[in-house]
Image (tube, rainbow, N blue to C red; front, side, top):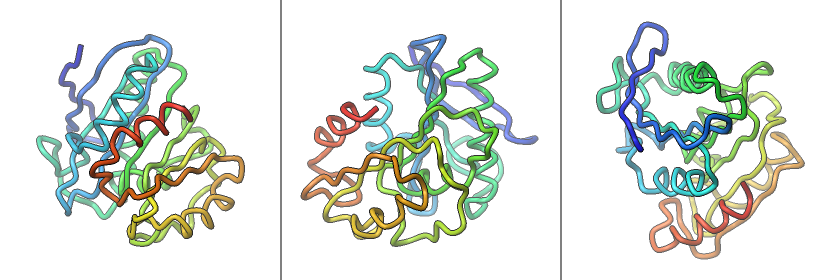
Length: 200
């Protein structure tokens, strides 16, 4: 059952939606760019949540600071990294020890920059990391990165640029391109879910 929760990022309240399916496995899912209408209700975010729920994970998606009822304001992806770490800590404090981190677009960018060596993340998944729109340099080596997916028609996360970045992140990470899909996966949501399901 999905329930509304609030957790603290520093001194600020962040709103989220938690679906408790497992006491052992959980995932934090982050949304696309707030300045372009991104929030936790985004359809691609919903698709990621759906796949993880089918796999039996507890899922936590949330609104970055300044979005919806989350306090404070947009912080150029800097403060948003604190929000990601706070969400991971929330699951960890629930007793969940196997925690994945998945992000779409801006959310993938924030996740990549938020990760530290001691961050409790088992596996990371990037959906359309916006390498054609935002600089990913420098980021830490992402040893936990398991899988990256984008669309062949995505001009924000161009497949050839994403493929070039993967060795810098984690050369062992899987990579797949959904033929015909653009950045928003309109008409390709089922394909996205299928690809994610096969690679989680």
